[in-house]
Amino acid sequence: MANTEILLESGTNEIEIMEFMIYGELYGINVAKVKEIMMSDKVKPMPHAHSSVEGIFKPRDTMLTVVDLPFYLTGQKTEKQSRDLFVITNFNKMNIAFRVQSVVGIQRISWNDIQKPDKTLNKGEEGVATGIAQCGTELVTILDFEKIVAEIAPETSIQLGEIDALGQRPKSEDRIICVEDSILLAKLIERALRQAGYVNLVQFNNGQEAWNYLHAIKDSEPEDLREQAALIITDIEMPKMDGHRLTKLVKSDSNLKQIPLIIFSSLISPEMEIKGKEIGADEQLSKPEIGHLVTVMDELLTRWDA
Image (tube, rainbow, N blue to C red; front, top):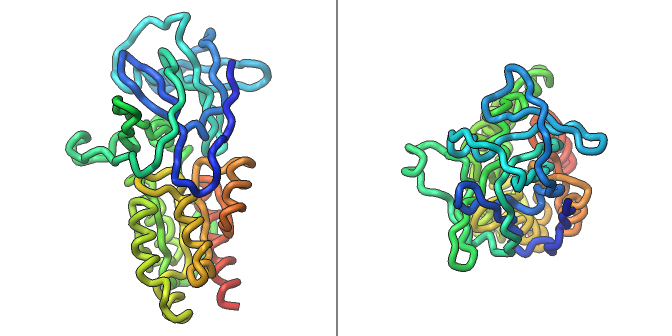
């Protein structure tokens, strides 16, 4: 059993990737998502579970769902080995165990060295690879664990019913800058915000694209700046430039720092909140709490106009 620690400084645009093997292929996960690594154990099957869900097991006092990652990725049914490991993850305020066949080690690289897979690899649709990383001489496929879990259990993703619960809302022309690399989540966030009345949305696929836009308007007069960027919502994990680096750049600029900025990420934890606070984020919210995001947006925009 091994506990992981967050080692990176805030806003350096670096990521630590834990590499693991499945059928001889290298995959990776952001170390910030890994709670611990355990030897695999007996799993209790659950009736009517998703085909990729092995069942549950209970180390110590915590009940965990176990996902058969080799089966999910390949569709191959294989006999479980005693050397298999459980990678215990924590994101979206959930603890989930993923079976892997071995763990290789940890690499620290820049987000700038991670590229989004070409759409031709996934028949034009977004696959389960959030990026391809060059780690030394090896290419490592960084998996989108949020998408995997959302596919297995859709109720764990963004729910538009939370917007319905807010009741009738006025239409707002405030320009909202939304930075999210996941095609699936970007669409869900856009749909939810439009339903909540925020119809003037500008979306970017990563922090670098957003920074290019913000850098171009940073010398605008205060009134013009307010019209061009009333509020920023950013994910953390993104190729080219992550959300922490984007936040640090925005909050270090004498003009841009007045723009309210919300980090909206599956990685929000007490440790991550410390990092976000250090670089100046106005608020930090955990996905998939879209209703909470909208109420915080309302509050920050009202505060800026006061």
